[in-house]
Length: 353
Length: 237
Image 1: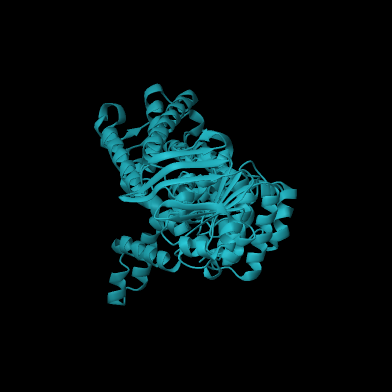
Image 2: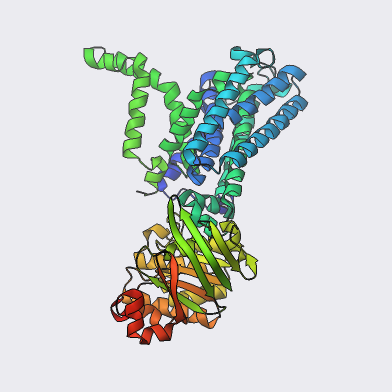
């Protein structure tokens, strides 16, 4: 009963998927203790943030059928909001909440304006409008260098309790120091978990059902009495606000914000890929897709190095698996996954077509 | 209940409805007949606001709905069952009906009443609508339109491609709806289906209503059938 409420009645509906989710959840929960080291923890935190970011995009693309390229803009607003506030005001919780509030209001207003003015047009035009707005925002962030730090971005301090030098207790737990970095990780982890469960609640609510109906056929949804523009705009706002929160979490984790980490088109492409690979219209797809994608992005090169060294005696293969070709193999893996899992990993595991 | 006065509808460069005049009396079932391309579906879609009339007036329950948004027309009490069934394939039978009920879970007694003539819907309650057979999808489409009491039902060719047993269920459903004084506008090619159901009949040709009268009159008058439809209605099935 409690589990059903927590998952909003939307269970994985596949044993293997449930196992994958359980492994991912356990891995992320215990990451600081299981995988010591700055890089591993950074990968785990990035996975947590991307789960929220991709799930919020899936609310738009997978559940409502809206193709938007402005998602990284909202992500960037969250990161810049918190980052610039901490940079200007100083490393206090007041600065965090002030930056976050300003960022959320800005995102909400922008999403509302873009939604109301643009969601009446055809999907392709909406996609183009969001691309133009997002590009303009990225240029603006880069050009206003006195304020934003331009292409270099801004490094800033965080409240004391989140600083690596802060020790909650002097003793180590399972060989891991209970310091500010660990606290920041769990802040990111629990915030991401709460936001993910909230999105799960949204998509399984009557509101979520209307969004799915709109995705399938907006005229039919209208004919049932639903104002599709209103619902689309609400979905746009909700998605934008969640992406903003994800951006704020990323900024707190990195203690840095810049165009390459939040506003770049590459991140937008990554989000799109993760949604497709994980399975559109399945929030669990965002979780599985993010975990696999970020792991591949961070460890494929190292794996290939080992493979290349192991195959040193075989000239062609050693060359083929050379670590410099990791992006090529990442691309091949994507093509294969889209080919074999056209409805995404979660879609396939749930027995869809 | 609903009146259309001199309604013209353009779809792109095509002038489809060319001055439709039609009155649907309260509690009656009106059958709209006509050859393919005469403008029957466009009439239903214009009433529903899916295409807006470029000229003329549509008055429903005393209110002008000529330029009203589709969602508001639906909220005013008009339900539409399109020719292609119009169900949401990715949602379950249950979710399709909840969506149509708009204010949460449908009334249990009303659901049982619907299950009375469409039992398959109960059986496949939690199954994705896309996996139902054609007849079951049509049942769901009609159930969705009647899951809440509506003032006017617009139904486009409900028997198209259906097995006789399912058509009999539809006849029962429409009879009960008539008994509940629901006004119905039914576009249908299957004359045997509508002969016993229809109170009145309107015949369309080239975007206009060319005949309006009691169903009994057209049903019994072979000359009139020949004149209006170019064939006897007995073969118009």
